[in-house]
Image (cartoon, rainbow, N blue to C red; front, side, top):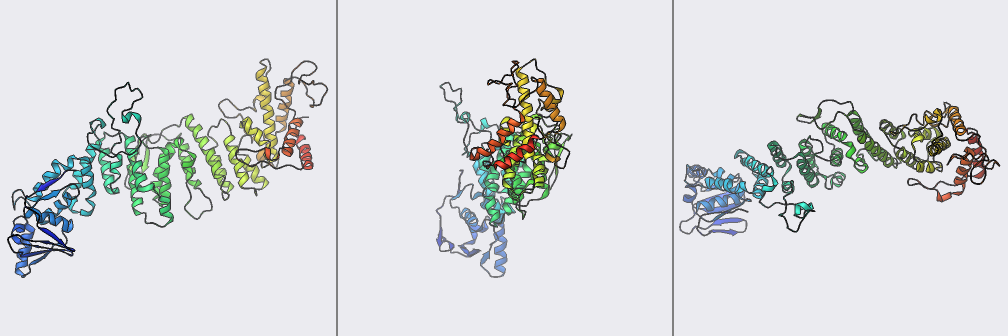
Amino acid sequence: MKYMKLGSKPDAFQTEGSNIRFVATELATDIVISIGDVKFYLHKFPLLSKSSRLQRLVASGNEEKNDELDISDIPGGHSAFEICAKFCYGMIVTLNAYNVLAARCAAEYLEMFETIDKGNLIYKIDVFLTSSVFRTWKDSIIVLQSTKSLLPWCEDLKVINHCVDSIGSKASIDPSEVEWSYTYNRKKLPSENGLDSHWNGVRKQPMVPNDWWVEDLCELEVDLYKRVIMAIKAKGRTPPVVIGEALRAYAYRRLLGSLEDAVSNGVDCTKRRAALDAIVFLLPTEEGSVSCGFLLKLLKAACLLESGESRRNNLIKRIGAQLDGASVVDLLIPVNTDENSVYNIDLVMAILEEFMSQNSDNGKAKLQDDEEIVEAENVSVTTVSSTSKLVVAKLIDGYLAEIAKDPNLPLPKLMALAEMASSLPRPTHDGLYRAIDMYLKEHPSLSKSEKKKLCGLMDCKQLSQDACMHAVQNERLPLRVVVQVLFFEQVRASVASARSDPSAELPSAVRSLLPRENGNSNGSSRSAATTTTEEECGVPTSSDINSLRSMRLASGGSERSSGSSDTNKNGHDKSGVGKAKGMLMPKKILSKLWSGKTNAGENSSSDTSESPGSVNPEEAKSSQSRITRHSVS
């Protein structure tokens, strides 16, 4: 902190209650200065020799025979006037970053110019500001903070501009040149503490982090903070990622902290709305400058604060351009309306739609703001990489599983989001299966047709072996879906057998049922469905059964039941031709299925659901005979 002392005579001010009195040592007091409820009893000559305004006021007061002057409108109040009065009497005055601006505005009010007296207070304070305060990092911030109570005086005096320019210049220099103290309470990297991983025994000087100035600026009010960040950006020497980190730190300090509690308790959120608008306006347009998680937190805040539509659209565009960097938790944005649903699914659908449109967008992306339209070349990319699509597909599957736990979530909304993401590549459909299973668990009252529509979202050919094993024991799934899973598991087993025997070749009809190597299937689970009234989630068709027959013939001739005398204990037929490894007859598979459902009880469970209940033996027998009519005997 820099100080400045003016004058040399002892202090003659005394405090009595709420009044401040000046006791003259030689001359009798002949003037009273009133500032609110505080009165100064002074004599005229020292004041009038340095203040043009007081000269005019005293002259007009003499005409009215009034020795009391009211200057309650002086900026800085009685404390600022006290500094000016002490200077007039030649007493010691200590100036620092906390009181210098108030004294400067009060001196301007009293018109203490050089034309009245050489070396007057205005001149001395200006020299102190220029030579000391504006050259000091923290003093410049303190002075800038004090301007709020001194408007419009400090604006007219250009003090705010000087402070902003000083702070912006210091924040923009190379960190290696920083030699002053600053606040940095966050955890530093080892290299920033001088503990490099390649430390060879000689301790290095601690490095100054690139964002060393971030926390100090968080002390500023939003309007001043906005001006400082704009000044830093205008200088063009600070990386966008550092600007993004500064905005993130400011958002947590001024906006995101206890926001939900403030909104729910009806607290006035005017300052928070102003902070949100400023942060969104200041967001760098360069790709990677801010994380997707931070953008989603801003979008959540915009929804809670009911911010303008243009702000939300701006954030949706930015989030859509980097959706692959989000997490499921980030997407769980609550609804703050009277809707029954817990989460704002429409907002996620808008974000996903923006992500999907990146494939077709060309040229520059325009981010619309309330005040202007910002063009950014890097916010939107012309094409989305296949890796990003895989990540987003997994993200949406996880999000579907989370929102499926909402008992009030309508089925059409869940299906609309799932179908929007259906074109994204998925190595497996296990995520979709988990979401479907969770929805069936939380919504047991679904009709048969609704269950079939829901199950039609997944492709049974793209379920992993673990998912298939869980599905065949899942009592919540429609029976036709279980049969379909069994059929494609049979196909998969035959493929494994064919790969173990290089001389064997799969029929083309079987190959057409297999998933492609890139994760997309040649067909879909829906294409294998029957065309009857239950076609939404069908079972293997006649063509599929014929494919299975041809597959069996290719793997070693006709097959018999597990109890046939043509098969020995080791699983080989009399002719010495081995059965396909892992191949199970449909009747054998189904008997295991039903016995598993009957006997497993609480032992059969999944990561997303409770264990299936037991099945009545009579019902199992009836259901089994019904299923085997669709199987190859």
